[in-house]
Amino acid sequence: MEPWNDLSGKVVMVTGASSGIGLEFCLNLAKVDCRIIAAARRVDRLKSLCNQINSNCEGPPHAIAVQLDVAADAATIESAVQTAWDAFGRIDVLINNAGVRGLNRVVVPGTLAYASSKMALDMVTKIMAIELGVDNIRVNSISPGIVKSEITETLIKQKWFHEFLFRTLPIRHLGTTDPGLTSLVRYLIHDSSEYVTGNVFIVDGGATLPGVPIFSSL
Image (cartoon, rainbow, N blue to C red; front, side):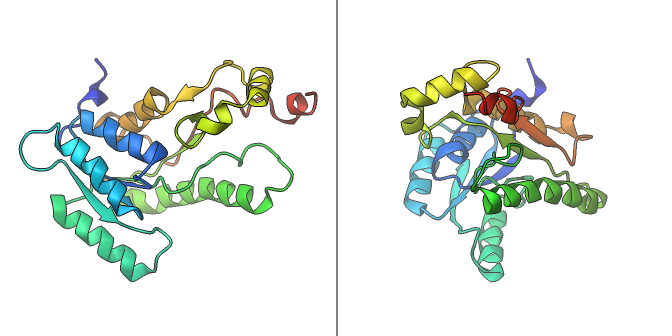
């Protein structure tokens, strides 16, 4: 059994936790005994998530909700982080999930600002890894392609999308957050990945490998 199937006691803060990938990360990590700090703007959804996690756990609460808008001012963010810290006495891992990665490896017209911002995150990952390494803080990023989730549910039902998918995606099927992304997240949290930092992990079934040549022949 992989060692990262037991992350007992790890305290993980997940932003964007009220829906989609962030919510699935929280549920999955709770299964391997992590303590969860679920952060997002929609606190009602966060409380429902935390109730679901805590109802399946014995002893003190394993999950708490923290209302947080990552675009807020510094003082507001600092206050939210302090609330999270006070809940469990520390924060071992931050999963900065607010926002979706993707268009930083394929040139698509009309996405200048978006694609540029995502490409910048790759460099932020590398620079932060360099600067924070002295404090034994590792920084990695995950760049997912389209996966089955509540956010992509409508898109996946479209006939044209499946035709596009089978022409461009090497593995010819869509992955799911669990285990496609959750397995990697668990590994990066586990101490066995202690020598891994400054990396950008592309998890997209090879979607960005074909690039323009195949896309332009559709």
